Amino acid sequence: MAKIQINGKKVVLRQNFSIQEVLKKYKLNRKKVAIELNGKIIPQNKYGKKKLKNNDKIEIVQFIGGG
Image 1 (tube, rainbow, N blue to C red):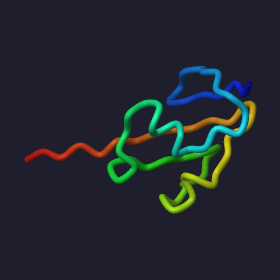
Image 2: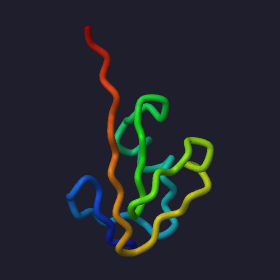
Image 3: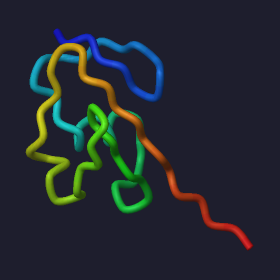
């Protein structure tokens, strides 16, 4: 198990969980979010490949339309 932090909340996920799996778990549309992992912006094409490990910190910013 990996203890990580998502938007300031500590969570426990199985080891090698990908960013894509995090988005799926929390029902977030990958086209409407930006992901920062340990201070670095992650491109969308890397979401499925980037695996999380213990003590990683993720910030998820969700885009919301309005007018």
